Image (cartoon, rainbow, N blue to C red):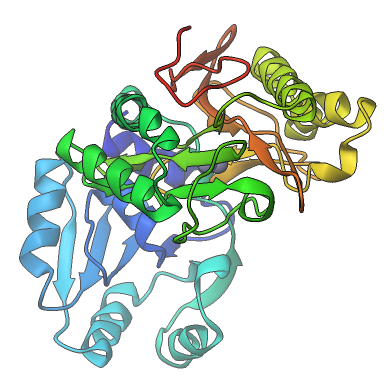
Length: 365
Ligand code: ZN
Ligand code: ZN
């Protein structure tokens, strides 16, 4: 999909407003190609204008033209001057939508006090298009997945070498950069043993990975602004009966979840597939988070997959399926894949094996 088509989609959603003031930088990037750290964009029925400061005027113009997009750039040297430009260029627009989830109380006050339009709160007008990934976006996410797969395959054997969580994280993040990522997709999670592993989003510490530990490794890469997301859980040494049983359970829930993904499925029903399997085995209260989330220019974005999510999956959604169980004294197990919804189900983008039990050496399947 071209940027022209993305903007056209937003224009179709301008219901009851004459133009949209886009203040969320991720939305601005997706719509215009501009990736600077300060700016607004105004989408009217016949033009798009980026407002930014002096650091980014040239960059904004270059990135828009590189993306094949014909937009205007208005530069203001200070925040006040940017606001003056916005006021001048929105005069006469009538009803101007703003992104209610992305405008602070203070910023709204500034807009309301200066802009000569009626400000109308909107939500999700850009995100509704952004959640559906085009081929270019899927290719970037696939590349990010492949880099994380490769880094994990190379580093996983070292889980048996007495390293700390932080050392494993460092090796993974270095390898991902060497393999072409611009960085990790998020702070890599390495969570080992009965205490750290019990925290789903534990930050790596100097805790040494020991024989008998479950080790949760949640790793993703960043490519062209797009994220990947994957979790594998390893056992160092011979798994205990409980470790084996719960790994099999989480894996069964995860595999069933991936198999259920299809356009038309309501996200809470996908959550229910995974949660039901874990709950039926008596571990429902060990599964303490949602089943998944969308991934794209943000690591967590629409559509969210949890008990309360009434969003319907569509072709082009890229979502994780990541059930897990956590308990202080036991540790944690999570298995997470990233999938893209297709017309007949989904395609799994992450390829690291999910052997059961999962030894810290290169997987065999
Ligand atoms: Zn993850
Ligand atoms: Zn995730």
